[in-house]
Length: 326
Image (cartoon, rainbow, N blue to C red; front, side):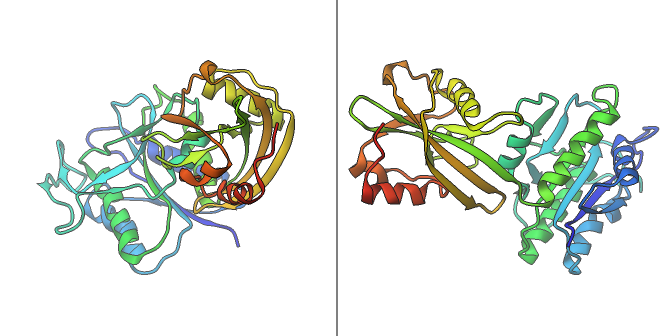
């Protein structure tokens, strides 16, 4: 069965002649997205509109993902809203003439975090400077809408990826580019993506292997992993590993042989992981650019750190049978 995705937008408001969110939604609707059942809705820019999606969720309507769009006329980038706040403070009237300064839902949390995977979206738009994360969805109807949506998702106990995206004027980012980004987000959130990942088995002169800790701002902050990363389009495993290690550690390595292949299903993605023996390196040459800590582990100390779930089966095997030697 095709995944069912809800895409919403708003009409013109506050003296604007149009709303780019409506134009993007209608353009994507006219083209369609292969393999996805797309449900679109133009929400009214008022309290009734802000409640529309949350009420549908409460009534049991099912979606595999919810993407809500709105215009932010002062922004220059496509803004992925990380938080929805339990507060409205309108600077202008909505389309019903309403101006409020109040809590959205009494007794509810002060904020909700998007249920869309930040990690997956970071992977999808890595290096694309016109797609950014925002810490505030404002205090107008846009924030009210996503707050009510996330509150209902929380209330019914569903695991639905939902996110609000503020779009800039077309003078800042073209309509075609905005359509492309939103289409990719829909495709990314509708089904679990499968990531092909490579990791480096790096040794010091004592036969210990390198482990890297993910930094505080990362979704998996505090967990440990092999250095490496995603294989980009057009790369083979060796090419990807050379690039990733250069970017992460500032050194050049030559992958010798693949020593392990693992697959793991996370809540938001499938990961296929290949581990390559990349030989002995000088710890003094390492410049850790993407991790907040690195360490060197021998066999008895392999379980002294908290490895990512995808790495755990291999670590357990090596604790019993020993680390492959370069």
